[in-house]
Length: 632
Ligand SMILES: Nc1ncnc2c1ncn2[C@@H]1O[C@H](COP(=O)(O)OP(=O)(O)OP(=O)(O)O)[C@@H](O)[C@H]1O
Ligand SMILES: [Mg+2]
Image 1 (cartoon, rainbow, N blue to C red):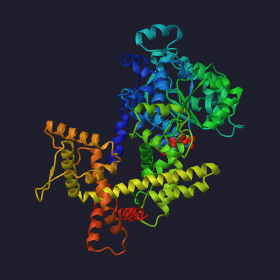
Image 2 (image 1 turned 120 degrees about the horizontal axis):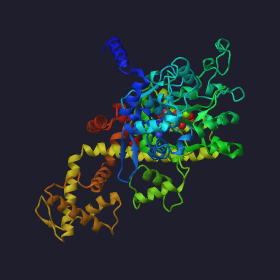
Image 3 (image 1 turned 60 degrees about the vertical axis):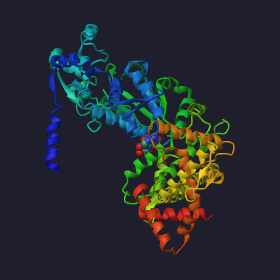
Image 4 (image 1 turned 30 degrees about the vertical axis):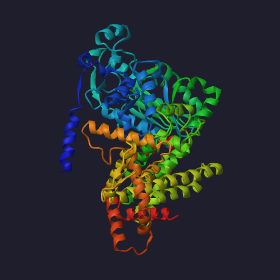
């Protein structure tokens, strides 16, 4: 790639976004594409939709715009889009409210806002998201604001759009002085929203509450020019460069809003209610922008506890953004965050993130009052796993049991810090689940906001996660071992099926060697069925079900094989593995394995490397660990 060429291409391409014309030309554009005159809220909503919406069988929606980067927050995002963005786009009253995202630390609030900003920037560079402003307006104002109040009803009808804003003092002045009132000659240009250019996207961050100046929001007198113009009410002597001015037509992020002095916030009252704000000695200035703030639960609670804040509180829409509660999604968060670091040369063994995710999610879940649902079961259900005796409906019930589930617990940032620490400290070329769990445990001592009681609980969760990982590790080795026994698995399966057939048909079975007729081998069948917990009473039904399955396969001309019945396959694998256990134990624990054992080990290791994403050293580590588990 020739970087200089790319740069010059880019510059040339940027020229495509330039458009300039008179107000008269602009009216033509509005007639053809009325969406150029949509409100900021509607633009945000359309931007979100433009990335695609997936509607699921149960009617729930996934907004792809968010799901590319935020995992496991589907429900909160759906609610946010439907209840706020969609309604606001329809000009419902909510658009006059400040959107307040409330959630625990590092739960994705800032990420949501950052995505909205970036999304808007990009959208303004597309045809459907294009927007225009009065050229030279410090607030990139909507050109339609030029149309006098008296003519708006007619204009709205003619153009098919709504016109709401007041012309800003600066444009009002120029219209009179420079253009002699000839609206049609005022110049309009296409604008691109950009946070860097402070165009249509702003961020307000509170400083010391005592010295915080409202000018940061609404602009201020320009002391350099005031002597030239002589009056504070001359718009040329005013700098319309507050965040509210700059974010007009787009979005303003209000960081740490509730940390602001309350007097300061009162200035927002009229903005949120009437869509305009007061600056200097001017008439009210219209602002068409989405204001997003974020806060955590405790800050919010103390805010609403103060009666004085009632007016402001009723002008906010609070959207909870709890932590993700799905293990699989949590793993993806860690993957995403670790990928961004410089430590990607150290291998992280498979299932390491899962172990950490199990721990984090456990700390976020609340104990259900429902019978027979412990935290681990709940965790599985939430992750979409099927749990015996539970249905979808139960999951929904569990989710509705606590409104504030996911508002506390271990945050992703903590976990990432601990994973990083494990990565930095390792003297090997990989880390695994055990290293991460150990690091999480060590970190609890230094965690500033954990009580002794919580610490006990969290330590317990770490050991639960560890046990879960042990099971996963055993299964993994089991699979890898069994694979090299694929043939034996098939033989065992055929043998089992022959016996089941004979059993169900009251028949006999023929010994392949001697040709002798024998009773079905009950002991063999049971030894397999017991692996997956089929009781003596249930065995008949299970066997019959399998026969039915086989004949269903036969009818469709398909062959019933080793992979056709998941539970049966599991049973066979487990049975084989139980038989193999001793082999594994010996092969993995002897310091000096003999030639055959060594060959077997190497086979298993290369299987783990080729098919399961291990490196030779992490596979070795896994084998040794599982060996030690089996020897306990
Ligand atoms: N559900 C999630 N999916 C993907 N990434 C997530 C999720 N939750 C948190 N993160 C990641 O964790 C990091 C911290 O999130 P972010 O800064 O957005 O949190 P926050 O809610 O603003 O926290 P704070 O209250 O501390 O400011 C980010 O890199 C973010 O991408
Ligand atoms: Mg944040």
